[in-house]
Length: 256
Image (cartoon, rainbow, N blue to C red; front, side, top):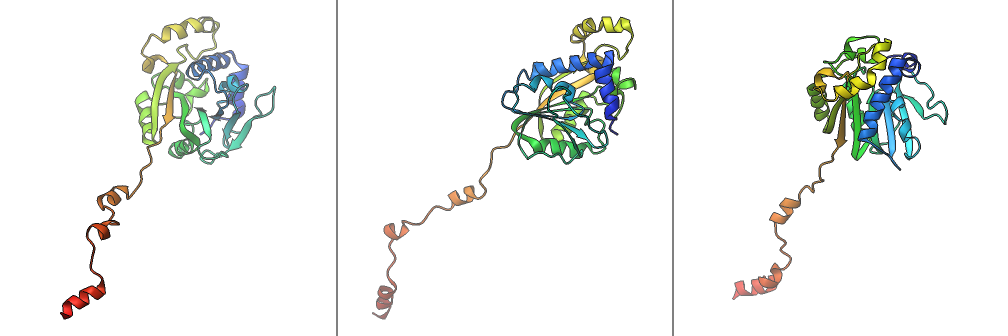
């Protein structure tokens, strides 16, 4: 079940822990996608905190927010790009999205398979998507003090298998949020150090969230029937190489 948009807003914009989590995940996303000049960038779930770096140069930025979650205007200091939509019916044309980010969307959806089908539909050939989900082995999925404590957490193998089933090709896998999901001042002061140390640890165990980048690869088009046509050579020149007698000539030969 999707979380309420007001709870998500309060966490990411009005709490020290939420602002820290936002910065860490956004920095990881920018490392994967340094720019999106002239491209269409879309976020689903509550991904808008991660989209600000692309507002300036992207051709278009859209924040899709599912109906059960609710919608809020974003960004607060510019023209609104947020849109309320159904989980599996996005108001986007097929194959037009260059970059897609899902956060608090997949693990909270009641129809994750249909959601992935919709993500595949809107991505253009060669388009990229990033899925950000709670790590089943991390601390953040075990605490309901953050939005990552809700929904279905994933192991890396589970997430990759589900994405592969829907024809996505995994490009990069990483983890983030090695700091504890605590607002205590001690942990807030050491958060930066813990993130640096955490990158040298097995991410499937330590990181609070999994970040998987995938691409949409289209198979080369086939031309049905071409092979059969080649197997049947053209006989247009047979009349020249092996001329047949005219019907009148054949009848005259038979009478004689």
